[in-house]
Image (cartoon, rainbow, N blue to C red; front, side, top):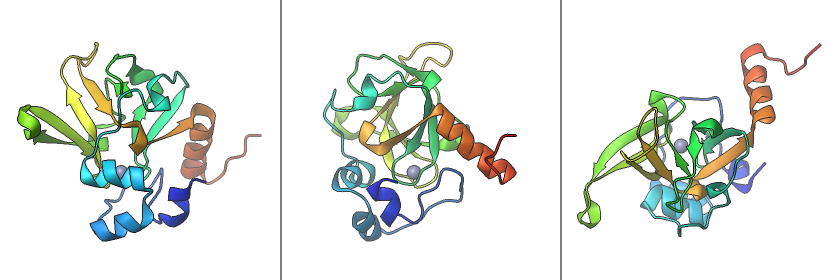
Length: 163
Ligand SMILES: [Zn+2]
């Protein structure tokens, strides 16, 4: 269990109910770097995330609330310096907001559950979507396929045992 999970009572991979919390509360429970990017729309340094080069099979979650965001099979090498995906897990995973800051026309992507800032989406991605979700690694949690599968099974059947 990560530091975030210990203090963060809303963190869940299966609870999809919307999270509403004051910025003050977020500041108390989130690690500094996560708070800066997720709640203050910060951007991590390019090439700083270990997820950028990772090819591991599994699921990426919102590091703030645990909402499932991306599957590793939609991840691709974009060369932009941040973990990049071409499709979110579901339509409700992500909220899209026009962002015209810094004189650029961009679309900001935030978590569909807790509205934390994740990154931006661009239309220069690969098929089938043509989209490039450029996401800060700091606000992602990764779980390898086997663990994720077990958790889903536990949640759906109330038991993790295979006979
Ligand atoms: Zn979230």
